[in-house]
Length: 201
Image (cartoon, rainbow, N blue to C red; front, top):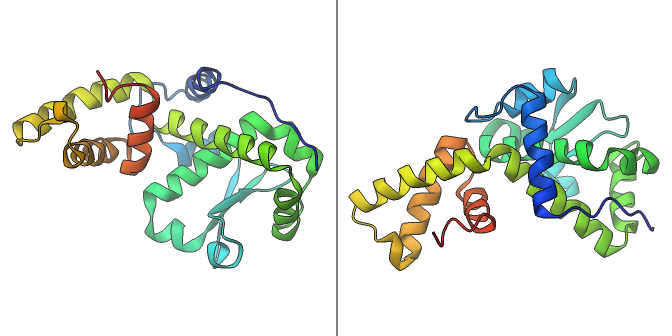
């Protein structure tokens, strides 16, 4: 299936994420209230579904009419950072790929899986990368990340971790510390620090 979404650079996605935060009146707010944005700002219902990940190997999906985000019940109840990222990821699909998804109109989980399977691999990878990047940029905005990094680096120095030597344990300490500030996983923080080139500063 040949469905081509917009080819956006990382800076394009950053601008889209910044606009998204500004439009919802939360620019500079940490942690970003993504659940409230989805429910009240976008008017999307969040539907916890038992066994979604086990049965379909996905944490969540956006309905064809863009009115619901279904999320795996176990993720919803037990993994708050993953739940928040799933919401931001699906919001990314809405903001970036809404027209593409409306054209495909997957009306059920089975239809959604068929749609994803039939996408050309480069198109699927491009759409997913954009949604992942958008989610990270929304949940961990650049200016707030830079401030949090400086604070975490100082705390790491005081705790005896030599971040300047790029020790893995020091990076993990910093990423975990920053993750708590933004209510995201350390992995999300590591990717954002890498994309923004902050590790090397």
